[in-house]
Image (cartoon, rainbow, N blue to C red; front, top):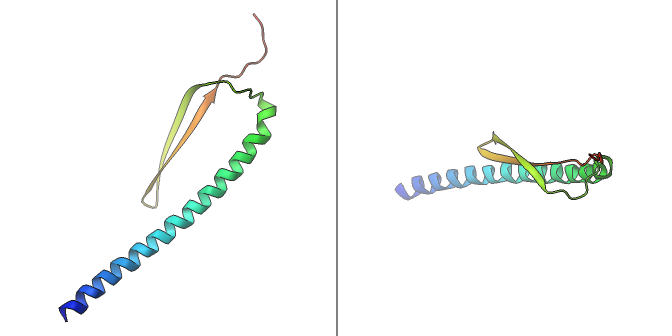
Length: 86
């Protein structure tokens, strides 16, 4: 009987871990889709903002906690050359 109780505990822990893994996988897939959409927006905006490969002048980091996960978003701040000569 003790074996059955332990087996039930292990099964419950396994089921809970499997459920959490499915949630993580679903969120990961959503983040991948968002990343692809953002990459497409960046490609469209590059010519409009005059991006010419400047080295980043600073970084912005945003940390978000969600569903037991920590998501860190990092953005590079680029110096824009407006073509103004001094």
